[in-house]
Every structure is written in structure tokens, then in C-alpha cells.
Image (cartoon, rainbow, N blue to C red; front, side):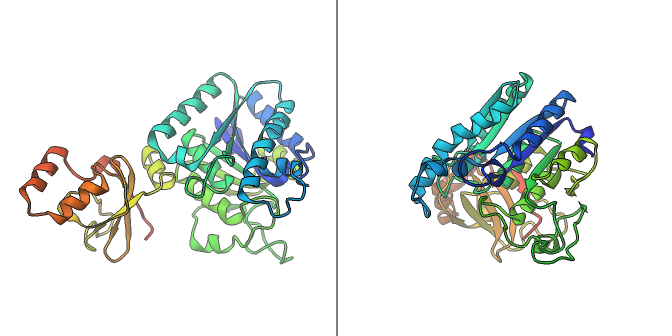
Length: 368
């Protein structure tokens, strides 16, 4: 699908475009991106903007902070976020709205659904959602860590059909173009393999937190949800002219022919497992075998602490990752059941609650 056919897109902008010199926001590269957003909306294409840059935008307000502490970085994010939003707002004659997220928000199903509803409502009212990770409050346990993957999660949540990730290079090359003059741009990727990941190399920007690897990770998340994903050079004005003309100025990762259902995609690519359920190595074996619902007597070990409704990893004793699923039992109760398998009380508990995991709450994992 070309951009001309898209109905709803997510565009991700990195810190190097927002604050290239880390001395506040600059319009040098943002004007052409803003014009692209305006022209998309004029064509009836709904746009969601995922914008990095709060830390980079606010860093100049904290002198003598060459190696800032975590607390100072959070303060930079708080100060820079307002400047970044004000900068974007100056480009548009329509309203915008700020949404700040953590991975903790996205991996909780109830909050994730709330985020979806907010995005849809904003779009219905012609308001541009501008989304960033909430660096001011996030912790290592709660953060996504880079806005490439965040943009893919947002694209999935928003039921977008296109994702544009702006980079400082024109797309994915077969080798690092900064080191190899004969590097060739790969215009289309139909399947993301280990070979594709091997081409990613290392980050080149000193400002952002992601590199080509995180962009490929994002593409893998998005394409499995049926979202065509473009990695393009955000520093070149011609990039956006070509996109509007329905041409590919960089690398396009084509969407799956049969994308995952929304709930399964969320569990696979967004929800984080809070614990593990270990089953016999031959459980769920065989080509295309469906794990199906899981009962307590099929579990050999319970790892971690989790509550009812949390996401857990189901794996075999030999270490193979079989599935991610929503558990109907807490780790405390499961530990009791596995330790008292022959106790009649255990049977009565399982009869009253039902399976540990229900078939409709399972997302199979293809990769071990």
C-alpha cells in the first residue's frame, strides 16, 4: 500500500530532528515535516505524531550537566516537553493534544483500551495527537526505552495502516553507509529475518536513544499488525514530497498478508510477562500445534509473582517460548495447586475457577 492509499498514519520524529544542537527546539527540519502532516490531513489522511526530543530540548536549561544524573534527565524532560509541544503547535492552524505514556500504561489492558479510546476521540474531532514517552516519571521497569518501538505500539493501538519512522539515513542498507561507500539501500523488505537484523549495525546519532535495530524491531511489531512501515530520511524535504506522491523514498517493510488480531498483537508485542509457567517439553509440540487452554496439572513450575489478569510466559522445560497469555490465577494460588496436586481442595478450586489460561487469551510465539 502506498501512502496515497492510507487512511491513518503514525509518523515518528526523533530527537535529532527536534533539537539537533541540544540547545532547544529548532524549526530547521520540522517545517517540511509539519507541511507533510498538514497536506496529509488535507487529503483526508488521519495523522498521529510520535515525537521524541523532550530531554534534548530541555538540556540547555541545565548548564554544567555534561553527564546528567537520572533525576536531572527527568527534569530536562519536564522542561523540554512544554517547549517541544509549543514548537509543534506553532506550525499548525488546527488543535493538537499531548499524550504522555509509559510501557506500564500500554501493557495494562484496561489502560491500553483507554488510550485507544482517547486517540480515536481526538481524531474524530480533528485534533492531532502528539505522543511521547513520559520520561519525567518513567522507571526502568516501566519504560519502552525508545520511541521507535513506542511508535509501533501506538500504530497498533490506533489501528493505523501506515507507520513512517524518520531517521538520519535514507533507510536500511546492506551495510553501514557511514563506513562503506558501496553500501546499497534496500528498498523493500517482505520478511524480517535474522539477516535483516544483522544489517542494522550501531546507532549513529549522538542525540537519540534508538538505532536501526530498534527501527527494525518497530517494523516487526507494526507489519505483524498489518501496517506498512517506512524508514526514511527525515532531514531531507524530498522525502515527504515522494511519500505524498505515493513513492518510496527509503525502505518499506510490507505488512503481513494475514495480520494478527488486535488483542493477540497487544499480548505478543506490547504486554510484558510478569512471570512464567513451565510445562512439559512435549506440551504444545507439533507443527502449528495450538497450545489451547492450560490446566494446573499440566504446569511443572511457577516462576515470578503475578496476579489474576497479568500476562505470563508459557515455556517448556527445555526453554522453548511457547506462548504469552493472560492468567486466571495468581502465582500464589498456582504455587499452592502445584504443591498439592493430589489434595481434593485443589481439584475443587480448579473446578470452580476453570482453566489457568483460557484458549481465547493465548498468543502463540513462533520464535523460540
